[in-house]
Amino acid sequence: MPVFTLSKRLSFPPAHMAIREGLLAVGGDLCVDRLVLAYRKGIFPWYSPGAPILWWSPDPRLVLFPNELKISRSLKKLIHQHRFRITLDVNFEAVIRACAETPRAYGSGTWITPEMKAAYCALHRHGYAHSVEAWQDGTLVGGLYGVVMGRVFFGESMFTRVSNASKVAFVMLVEHLRKLDFALVDCQVKTDHLMRFGAREISRKRFLEILSTAIDDNTGAADSVTPPVFSLFFDSPSHAFTDRRKGNPAGGRPDD
Image 1 (tube, helix red, strand yellow):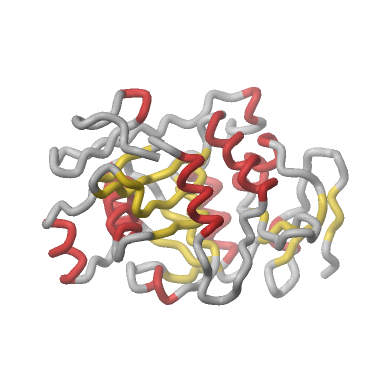
Image 2 (image 1 turned 45 degrees about the vertical axis):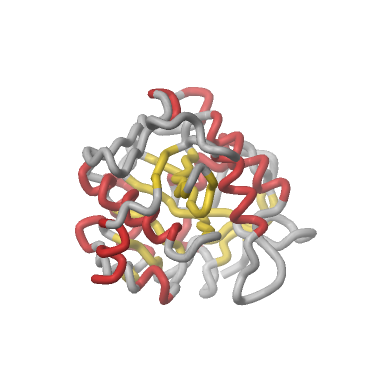
């Protein structure tokens, strides 16, 4: 199948028309409306600095069903030691910046370009993109960010500066998504790291079927709908996990 070239028109070809490697289209822009439409259709942007915007819908798709989360014995022990304070949306920009600056094992560069950072910060301001932060002694030491549509969390990237910080943040997030009856966490492509947490591959067809029921059909352009409500908190006082709109945990705002 051909790779489609996008115009200024706000539209995408059907996801099932992606080539074998998962590439569907090239071009377009990263405006909020286009990104919202892309995620609703099971499509996401991923490209290198200096390259045109590439849009993907891989087959198979790596996902984690919240009820299938696996936590190793050692990680459970670490969580119970309460070494990290976990928050939601306290500093989205710091998280995405840290993700962009973290060296990757598979290369020296990053796919989180300045344009991508600006685009996802805009998604955050509209209520679609969210960050989860792990703090230690007032310092940001790990975290992740992603996009919420309906009952789906589309994971984008994570980072850690202290061993296991991002793992704890991820586990806390998934456990609460389960309580909120989220359908799945989209992990995009296969990684051993996420498969150890219970993620597994499903067909693109099955993934799109789940999206069709887990995302409200009325969710359209960002300027015509109310952004999804995504306010999280933990019952355990030792893991303060709060929405910035509800105030920060005791101890004040962590340092950037």
